[in-house]
Image (cartoon, rainbow, N blue to C red; front, side):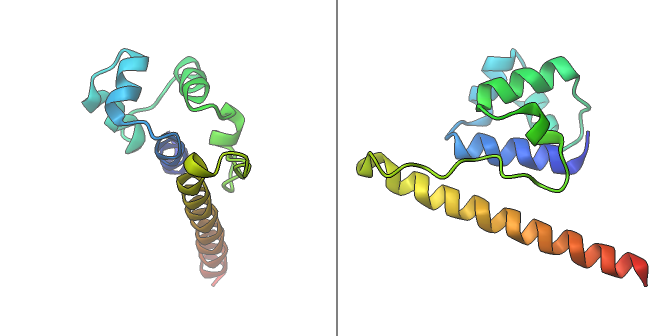
Amino acid sequence: MSKTVAEKIRIARLANSLSQQNMADELDLTVAAYSNIERGVTEISVKRLLRISEILGVSAIDLINDPAPKIFNEPSSNDYSSNVLSQQVYQLIKEIQSLTDRVDKLEKVRAKK
């Protein structure tokens, strides 16, 4: 499994306020086995990737596409009390995706040299 897929799964899990234990329970895995997925150690089947995307509420295509797609929608401002943290998480995810894009561009430039 691509490291970027594993990272996207981890980011989506955190954005959904889920623990590795929550994910392991939903997938009928041990926490160690699920951790291996997020670390890119374990290759996952299409069926498992689809289940992970379902749990996380993101498209499996968005998890596997490179470069990193926008896999989260900007939270609405309807519910202020629960929205403050969502806004902060969303901003952090946007920053991570922007930095990932910049690193990818720099690596491409470096590879051409």
